[in-house]
Length: 80
Image 1 (cartoon, one colour):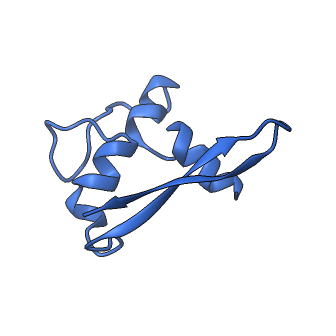
Image 2 (cartoon, one colour; image 1 turned 90 degrees about the horizontal axis):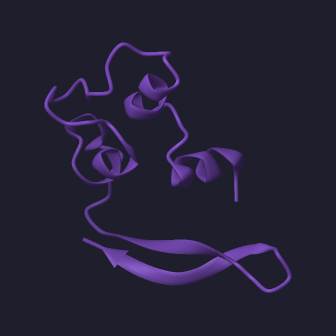
């Protein structure tokens, strides 16, 4: 797992909501629609600014912590 993916899954990326919480941005709302808070879920599912990067359907494999304390790929979820 890359560090960027780990940050994104935890919601600690370049998202307006996170940067606003750290007082690095003046607003937590998305530039595409100012009534929506830009967080991970909004960017992945609905934000029009990331429409080209979003596949029409994909398989998301959720990371899980195994009994040895190591991160591995777990259950796959089909997103449409």
